Structures are given as structure tokens and as C-alpha cells.
Length: 251
Image (tube, rainbow, N blue to C red; front, top):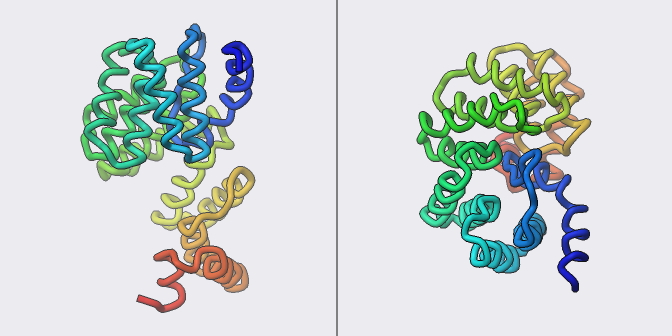
């Protein structure tokens, strides 16, 4: 297939990627595409489809043809992270950052990676940079990750601030809505937790975690019928989850 045709096909998928590969971003506003970006985009698309070998092949081809393709390095970092080769992941994230230190997508991806591995200071600094960048068309994504990073640091109030900023920019972003559902439940704001869950369900499907929190929330509000509905849904849809084992009394 001609390169131009491949480019046209892969561009169709770009808008879906940041939602499918939650909390990651590969493209920055106003950036110029290179011919090797076609391989990078195909690699991300294959990663979305969980065809990891094909993803790696295309992403590696992008890097081999252009060692300065920071988007491909960042995507390779995520792929290696996905298959638990963390040293390789960090190497590619660092390469991406060294090539494009001011790119918001790179800052977000590497910052999240570091925070999830408890390297909070460096990770949060990168996420704040990405979240503060007015040229970043996905500020809400970096702000959500900054909120999660603050939660990992035990800074719940600061996390709430970042998550609310994220939702002010994109009030439909499901990961931020979930985090606020969970936090609201933990601090006893059950009506707010209930509301965040309903907003979340307008954008995404239930998970074992949303159902578990929903059960506890509705019980706290005295809504036993809805709590039982969530319980049955948890047992039906996610019977092997830890949450299902808890509500069914299995240890």
C-alpha cells in the first residue's frame, strides 16, 4: 500500500488513541508530521488492538529510520511498559524527553510512568509542566495524571485540585470522573460520589472498582435496592474480581 494511503488510514484512528490508551498521549498540537510518523501511528494502532509484535515492529521501524522521532520513542516506552520490560521503557521515555524536552505528550507519558513507580518528584514536575502548557490540547490528561500522582504521595487535597482542573477543561474525561467518585466516597461525600459515577457512566462502562464503590455509596445513602443492583452486576460481569469475591463472601 502506498505511503500516502497508509498515512490517510492511520490519521482516522488518531482521535481514538488517547482514550483507548488511557492517560497517554502521542501527538502534540501544532507538531509537523514526518514520513516515519506513519510507522509510528500504525504501531500505536496495533498497540490499541493488542497486536504487540506488529506494534513493536512498526515503532522500531520508525525509530530506525529516524532516531529523533520522539513520538515513536515515547510509544515504544509505553509498549515496553505494557509487557513489563521497564528498563527498556524508561530508556525510550528518556530518549523521547532528551529529544523533545518541552513536548507536553512526552512530559505526560514519562511523568505518569515515573509516578507509578513512586519517583514522585520528577514525575510530578513533568506532569505539572504538561498541565500548565497552554499549547497542550490535552491539559486535562496531564492534570488527571498529576492528581493521581498526588494521591500516590498521600496528598488528597492537592489531588482534588488537579482533578477538578482537569474536569473544568474536559468534564467528560472518565478517568478523572472515576478518581473523583472514589475520593468523594472516601471523604464521606456520598451524593457527590453518586453524581460522579453517573457522569462516568455517560462516558465509560462499569469496572469492578466503580461497582464496588457504588455498592458502598448506595448502602451509605440507604439505597439498598440500587446497592443490590450494583452487587448483582458485579457478580455477573466480574465474577473473578477481588471486589466480587468480597461481596460474595469468598476469600
